[in-house]
Image (cartoon, rainbow, N blue to C red):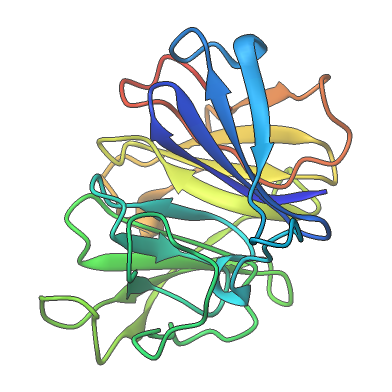
Length: 219
């Protein structure tokens, strides 16, 4: 089953497949997943390439593919030796404070990170250190949001582009829930009032989700 997905471009989607390796989907029509063809990443001997454990859970790439952000509890921002190369562990790996977190995401200017932990059911906001990456001196703040208000088993968290909505994805209800965030990216202002949801009838074990650049499509 897939542990994470991320877009490389309008017509390429990278899929991290937990137990059988990793693959890339190439779309004949931009942003149309129904036109996808799949190619697994393999070594010269034809064996499936296993991704670094840092990428278990939600993650995203910088536009040039040379940095990856996220992972579950392990990586915050990591410099890759080559664009989209996620098949090794690297010494530049930087950890976030909550080592048992299942999912993480960031705000738009990369000054704050957010981690979800199933042991507490909370999303915790984290203040990051000074630029440039990798961030150091990351520390939890007092700002939290209960992610299990509607989804019993969250597996991914993400914001929309302007930080006005927080999305919680999970395989307990196989749904995605959208919560208003009145103050952009301020998790303490997130509220369950006026939430909306979408049930993934296409899948019964949802692990992750992401949007295209303008937010008009979800994968």
